[in-house]
Image (tube, rainbow, N blue to C red; front, side, top):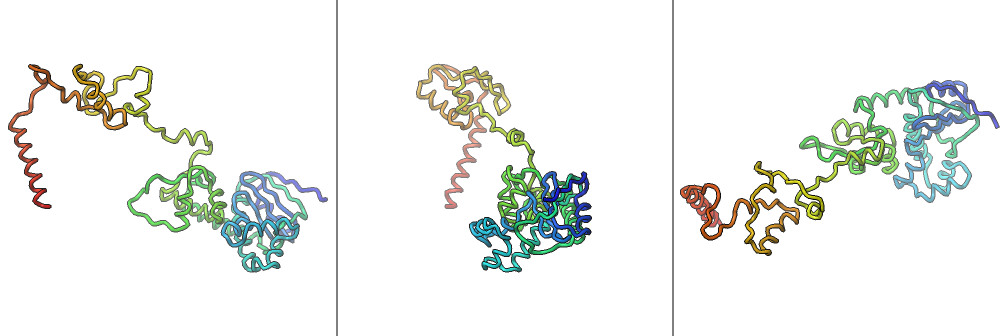
Length: 339
């Protein structure tokens, strides 16, 4: 067994160009996040895989083109998976080549990043898919440059590339147009899935998913959350505790007087209801507050009067009351006549 060559921390594309020019056959393992492996056959790229993008098997099975048990049986046979599926009639040669070519360009975007990273090359190592198609390293490099420019033109921020994605709670504009693939991404952005998760879930290419997500982020429809699940949970707004809710009624601690929303004094400082009120009347007055409805503010405004007791506060002018009654009756009569 040949000793694997361990290189320095260098840009992976530079090492790939050197191996391709030398006509090497083997696997270039790229470390880092997400990393991956580039398989070479006589200097040509035969396959690339990365954790950030779905492979040929995932694309075929998730899209429904190939049953999962068929792929698993072919992978467990020990033979080259691609030629075996074509020989058994599950796929045509053109279908397999097209799917493999898309997987190569897709995974190359994540494996061959411009940033330097640690790489190693193991000569003679081959992928179990088999030699389906061949890609020139120089052509692949030009395509990667073009794809990175498309991403930056769509949205300069790369937060959605690796972050956990969350759909916007409401549309940022009154009217917008989204495509079918964009809508599927929006409804699956639950605050926990990343772009790679969405690509595998929907059976799509990782780069295409990234491009659509950046467009959605530029439109304000998708945002990236924090990487820490605990921090994301803390970001979630807690429901406000209602002072008139059941929790407040069950609390044993002395409640602080809640301010009146009408702008007056706190409710606890208002004059209480007269002690002559019966128990059933007290229960009826407290029912809206215990049920989470509006605070019972009508009791202080309408105090009951005992014999000979005067109401506090000035009475409204009688003429004004008559005017209100006349206006109300006129509106009711007009409404009845319109029926």
